[in-house]
Every structure is written in C-alpha cells, then in structure tokens.
Image (cartoon, rainbow, N blue to C red):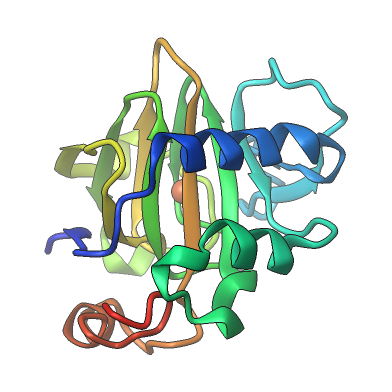
Length: 204
Ligand SMILES: [Fe+2]
C-alpha cells in the first residue's frame, strides 16, 4: 500500500520559505527534540531540546507564541482556512531517523522546505506492529516496501502511522507538517476525502 500521495496544494514563494525557516530559528527555545532511543517499553520520548541544534534526530516546533498570527499573516494570500492555522508545525531532521511510527500523529500534510532525503517505508507482521514505537532494534523484522525521494516545495499526504525512516546524509532537512489526524479515521479515508476538502486551504 502506498504511504505517500502528492497533493495539489499551493507552493510558497522563496521569501515565504525563508520566513518559515527564520521562524524556526527565532523560536529555538520552543523546539522539541524527538529522542530516537527507545524507552524500555519500546516507545519514543518527546522532550524539550536544549538548543543543541547539532544533535542528530528529529526536531519539531509545535507550539510557540503567536503561531496562529504568524501563519495568518504569512499565508494571507492563500485563502487559508484560518481555524486550522494552528496545525502548521515546522520540523528539522538531522542525519538519520531510524524506523518508527510517529508520536502524536497518524497522517499529515508534508512540505519539504529545504534539503533532500529519502523516506523509506516498511512492512511488519501486523501482530508485531505498535503505534508510536521506535523499530531501532527491529531491522530484521522489517520489510522495505517503498523508497521515496520527495520533491522540494510540494505538498504530500503522509502516513505517519506506518513505519518509516529517513536517510539524510548531507544537509539539514526542514519541512512543514500539518497534523490531519483528527479529520480522518484511516489513511484510506484521508486519501479519499482530502481533495477539495478546504481543510487547510479553502480553494483546495
Ligand atoms: Fe516520522
């Protein structure tokens, strides 16, 4: 089953890309770091990052002061569904993110701002699947199902529940993410209903 689909949502300008990346660095003290070392129960830990931006892994700006206003101002030309502006988050990935199922989100819209990387999706025996778990030590149980190189400045619907890894050997990869978990019960339902939903951009 495919875990990623291109959306027809709008591409931002380079100036807007720069403003989003700047927003991330202006709010570094609110960035959360996703610890990729599993807990004893196999889950992952979300913890506040202590400004060490060289740390490998997944960094996520989810909540910060005036975030709603930031998106409403920046995206005022895109007929944004303003109610959902709070859902935009900014994430940064450094080097390799081992296979995992995401914490706190099932499916999202994804937009690569800078950098290049391959996303690998894996299948596992359904009896062994646990949501929000790191599969760091389970490579032998995983079967590679899909290898995707994402286009820059292009929106995708992304299955965050599925087991995925990011191989990112060279540059820091930054992206936008919009958590869509609350709008759809399954990824198939998201695929079927996202088009012309007006959920995030009223014209799409
Ligand atoms: Fe992830």
